Image (tube, rainbow, N blue to C red; front, side):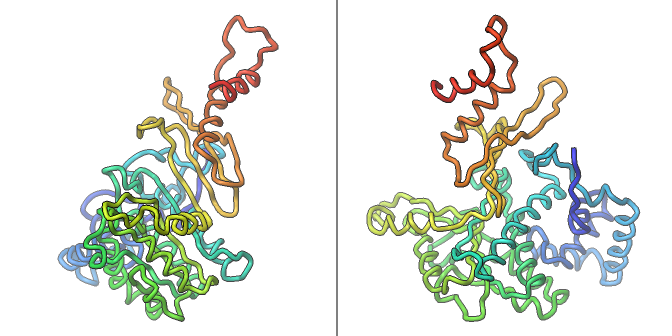
Amino acid sequence: MAFVGLGPSGSVRGRSGGRADRRRRGVLKAASPVSEGNAQAVSEENAQAMSEEDAQDDVEELGEEVAAKGIEDVTVEVLGDSPFTRNLNVSPMPRAERQHYINEVTNAVAARVDDVLSGKVENNLISVTMLLPELNTSLDIYDRRFLLSLTWEIVIEIVKVRGLTVKVMTQCPTKFGGLPLSVAGLRRHFEGDRELSRESWGEAMDRVRTGDIDAAAVAEDDHVFLVLAPTNIVSAPVIEDCISLAKKVDGKRPIITLNARLDEVPSHSGVMQVQGRKERLDFVKSFYVASYLRCLYPIGRNFPLVGALRRHYPGKWEVWFHKQTEKDGDEEFRLIGEFDDMPTSGQIGDAIKVERFRSSPVPEGLPPSFSLGIMAAMVVVFW
């Protein structure tokens, strides 16, 4: 068991409780750009619940409570030597644990952005994928607030820490005749958070811009482009706009996609069939994966958790095996494979099969020479 520090922001967002705590969280949402939820609702709630003097008093009181409580407020438990918390597959995930994974992604993205801007690496296309249950659009527990929290942490690293200008880009609803539920509302909520935080950020907020995913939205003084959840939909593929955006940017300014879904989508009009298919596939493959996290399950199911596939720049791809004992419910993650490139489903499956046999007891009646290593090798060859 280990503990990872989150800092004051992580501990404050992790608090919950009665009426006073709800009021305090309302103040923090208005004061911080990493607010979660509908910014307009937050503003109305704050206006009705407290005056400015009451809000300041509550913030000071909360700070004293956090300082008095100590280390429990600024740490989160990770399992063994792994980077994973106990609630990796739990929804809703505790906010402190959300912040742990957000910090990991932000650090990887910031490192890759620095390497692109310094000329250390040439590929300016950066992909970020985090498919925890609440960020998986195929599940009914999808929570866009999680994605917005991640977005703001990356924005802070780019704008406040590095002094650069970022343009946050989303799909245009009027152009596509509507948006998928996973994308709808992202820009409105982000801009609402931005306006609420403008006073506390000052002139730095002028370097946080928004726009459609379009080459026409590119300005000469935009340093980094952050594209939120670009998603191809039937008869309205956004990938063409992404390709135009990449061509317009000079190749030295980073373009970051968060949880992109740019796979081919069938279309009755043939928009995404044969014409231009190779260019689209090559474009998707050209992105460098700076951060990737996906829970692994049995085929066709979302439970139980089998393991996780992870990549954290500049490290390798990692396959982790999850084991939970039935007697006491204790669990652990074990690193079972490392790869230079993203492993295939076959490689992931083989690594999990070998680990399951390696950790199983030797069946009675087998000769001593029949080691678990030989059993594992047979599984890979004959399974």
